[in-house]
Length: 244
Image 1 (spheres, one colour):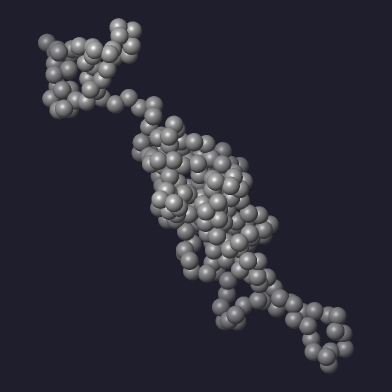
Image 2: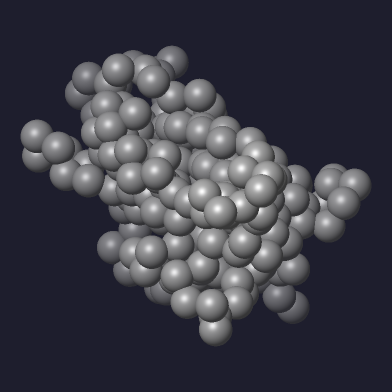
């Protein structure tokens, strides 16, 4: 896949160093740690067992396109995720959350905002009742609640040479660039018609008492905006709910 060639050249955790020609047994190979600086130690020794996720939002032909990437170094598994956003939901936040929503036990992302939103959804879901990306956050919270094993979330630095994060970033950019080619491995459900997650909400409005010229008696009533919401609510409450 274009953009992932640098990840294919990543060194292994151990490298093979053969002895010189003076060695009596040239077939014996010693393993030494593959580190550029012997005084440094790996901060996370089992970093290859983590699942790295990232999102991408690009402007293509005047329109925003988003994509998410998931990369597991140990199994070399690559997953391209289509966040399936549209309108107000087609942004980088949905792309980041779409990668985190994939089932995994150890998730590493460079989006601190997504981690805070996921934590808030798990602990205080009532505060996210009107969140634009509420459908994806519910998927993350449900996965955390139903998982047999604990799920660990980690924040990693973006664009700082972390191998797993760099690969996930390239996968997300590839998915966003070729979104119309249907290359995705996973596609999230649509948040609503036209990407509107609030399509089922009923807004405060006032019914017109006089039908319009083109409105028949069987058609649904026409609604108009309340010019003064506070006073309109007061008049409705006083007219219908009079207290002794």
